[in-house]
Amino acid sequence: MRLDLTAPARRRAISLTPLIDVVFILLLFFMLSSTFTQWRQLDLVVPGTGTATPPVQHQVRLLSDDGRFLLDGMELNLQDSGALTRQLSQQSDDLFVVSADSGIATQALIGLLDALNAAGARQLSLAQRP
Image (cartoon, rainbow, N blue to C red; front, side):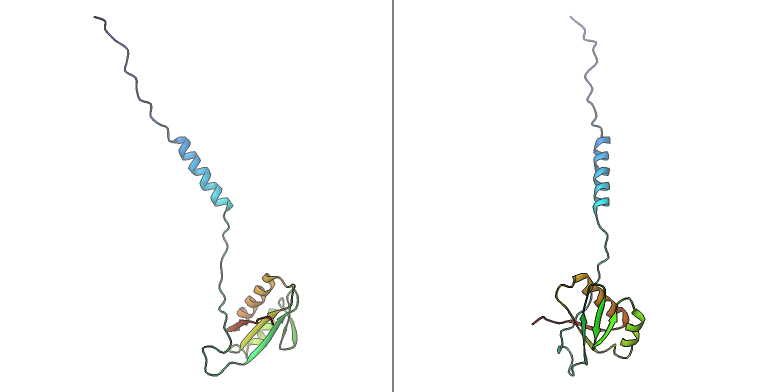
C-alpha cells in the first residue's frame, strides 16, 4: 500500500487590505468633493397677515449688483453698514418691502436682505413684480 505524505491543501485566507484601501479612497473622494456651506434662513412676512394693525411699510429697491439701493427714496450702499444701521435704528419694527430692478443677480438680492436683517429690520418682505 502506498503512503501519501503530501500535506493537505491549505485554504488561503482572503486579504482585507485591498478592501480597506478602496474604502479609504472612497472616503477621501467624498470628503474632498463635498461642499460644506452654512445654510441660513430669512423669515419673510406677507404684508397684512398676522397683525390687527398693518405696520408702516418702507419701500426698498435694489438698483445694481454692486449694492446700491433706495430706501424710501434715499440712495444707500451695502458697503456703508453704519448709515444703514442709523437709518433703521428707529424703524426696526416696520415692514420693509424689498424689490429689485430687472437683471439683478439673486445673490445681490440675498445680500440686501442679509444687510437689512443685520441692521435690525425684523419684518422683511419681497415685492411681487406686476
